Length: 484
Ligand code: NAD
Image (cartoon, rainbow, N blue to C red; front, side):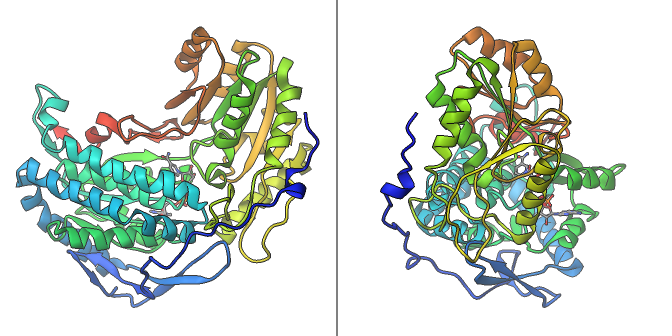
């Protein structure tokens, strides 16, 4: 293993993405019934760039009257939209997909500014995948009877959709595309720290000529979210966010006719066997936990390494994280951007403190971080066990808890010892081990010799406290249909 510190001998020249081509308003209103309208609350809050604390724009806080208007618009639009020929519905959705592609660069820059994620990720993953979701579901719009043969699929009505801040445009696409392809109408609320790309999407929707009221985008925080959840004229709630809020929503709509899908938290196990291709596995570990600063529901935040290779894997891992570049999300060299908010940074720091207080051995990359903004270096915890808080709870940051194992049955038991069940990764050269683990791991998604791969055609979702229902693929359509 080399002890050369690449950061000392080789500095990358900054390769900053330009902001010249982006158009942002100072203030954003609500998108209701096909147009931007002022909120009845007249209250605005700031959307802040987490990399430098600068205010990017002011965002409206929707109140009860606004949600009533948005739900009314969606209800009125439902009759016409659900009766429109399915291939006509598809045309609008294809158009939205193409318009996202045309403005992909603008969306990528705004997403990185608002979220803190590296431009490489928003440019190459978030925005293309968001467009692909619209393309994919546009294709299904007029084929629902083939997707579900011998049934008569019908839309549910108005869907209230609430999304988190880690993949803002992508989560909006996951929600809106299948819902409208099936003939539903939508009231969507982005997370309060990252409303901008959803509002830019509203501009595209307006330009696309989508009939008024089919998609309504309202902004605000927890209060606005609960107004949507509890609105009597909404037929379906689709929520992506924390398990804590998911449980709250489930109990508040219990006893109503509302349908529900929940995409919640996770604590993914990433399992490396001694017969794995080690260098590829190390890259896989890095991608599993440090992609999007670890703000990923399916992050591989619990690493299990077979004991015989644990020393070499940990050594290579430390070596690899010393070359990760932390800093300006708009710099194309950046691997790790800013933590999305001061609150989330405080949460992560608190978990790091708990990890050391409970006796874990911490290893952090030595690196210089910018003076303003929210930053956390990639962090490893060694010598932790199943009972450590940082092994049990979702941190949602760049913090990896490393444990070892000896046998396959031991690792299955350890990996399943969690209330979550969203994701897992398995690294081995042996197909039989992959089959055994994909069968026995209690996780909605299991990746083999890769991690964090997303595709609109494949369903995604959790077991246990990680959620109810699936998004993506055919299963993602089912969540927005009833069958006769
Ligand atoms: P959060 O639950 O705090 O907030 C999510 C959304 O819910 C936001 O829009 C928020 O304004 C809204 N909200 C908050 N309280 C509400 C309430 N009482 N009623 C209605 N709406 C309310 O989660 P977060 O911090 O924004 O996101 C991080 C969480 O999301 C993590 O736990 C992560 O694992 C999860 N997540 C899951 C998936 C998945 O597909 N399973 C994907 C991304 C994120």
